[in-house]
Length: 123
Length: 330
Image (cartoon, rainbow over the protein chains, first blue to last red):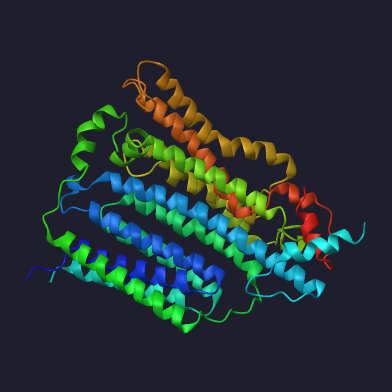
């Protein structure tokens, strides 16, 4: 039996990362960790592309999947920046509710409905 | 036994263990730091798999800039209690689904590795490389063969910064980066003084090298963005409202130049992105230079988060709920 090549080893490692990331992204309850899980899931998927592009000879390595993964990395950082901005915003709204004495309602605060009547009162 | 197999197996185990630690760690800060380490390990594995361009992009953007974004957000989450875990039936159902998908994919990976590998597009890229204007296959794919993809990617970054500015506009003052930045002391300042000029040179070199070697607009842009982030952190520069017009121009520059070149080429008998052979390299480098500047400005702005204009909003009363709603208007 021949020794396993890097394609098999890293293919399975990437698959493991994909599975862990997918599971935590779908079952996690903390926003930051779910975002991290999505990124790990994306890394795992990138591993499969890079492994598919790998050949034992340097000339045979396919550049097209590499370009796709670079595109994916840039799109992922954009998505993470938006997700993190949303996390900051949600936290700010929860803090504002806590300061105002209204229950923060951790799972899903509904700021819009609560703020409207109070906004109207000073008029 | 081949020493490379031991290296591969060790690195693969480290990748899986680090991913597990990132996701399972109870401490958010530890999670983020481990995540940055994981990004660098991933870059190492991709170098091993013959993908140095992707490794550079992952190290600079996936580990570096993303890590900076995560650390900046972490500050806002301080003191937040952990939420209870999902209900057990949900976890079991999701676990079963993930296991099924993973088992199917594992069969695919094993079959893929065992079968004789098809040539893929490597031959097509090599045959047409001479007509692309650059000597490096990945740059040829990104800026010539699949240029439309890359244009859309630049547009995604542009959309991201527009959305982040819009979201952060409503942040309560307590959450906005306000007032003088923390003085990080002489070490940070000395480091910035030494590292900033070197990093500017490195970013420009990566851009230039992309034509014939691993590197390119995205890697160079990420290094230049790190220059901006370091300058902000070291207090050497801080974004102000009067910089907004320049920032907006920088965000849009890459996509604008890219579209203008594509349309300009398409005006003649050629289709868009079909650069004339004699002009291909100058055109590609023009696009790459503009895209690099845009990426650097956009990533640094994503790190800073809030639009600088927000800093001039007078302090709203933090004790009333509508203060957040009022902060939502410029």
